[in-house]
Length: 125
Image (cartoon, rainbow, N blue to C red; front, top):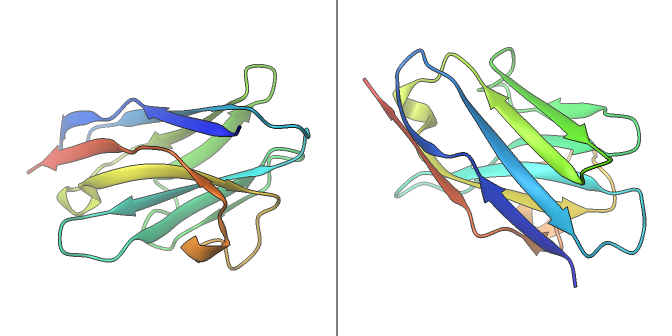
């Protein structure tokens, strides 16, 4: 069974950085994509990024472009989200999710098959 486990969330001041990790297991194939979503209280879930394990190509939401970077360590089955220049509006629960590939519709959460439990990111002003 596919399992995703996020870690790395926490409390950080505005302008600071965090690196989220998503540990993936249970895949029966080598090529898959990992997306990052976030959900703030009272708001809809937002697609943040999607990275393809095969070639490292990634999509980013405009709200995080230039500040967040997704990467993967295929040997460890890990995907990371490096978040720099964090702002209070980045405060949310962050989730990783998986499907077979990334596309320009990466932000549609209904396309994803498996989800992690989420990790809280809080940015103080």
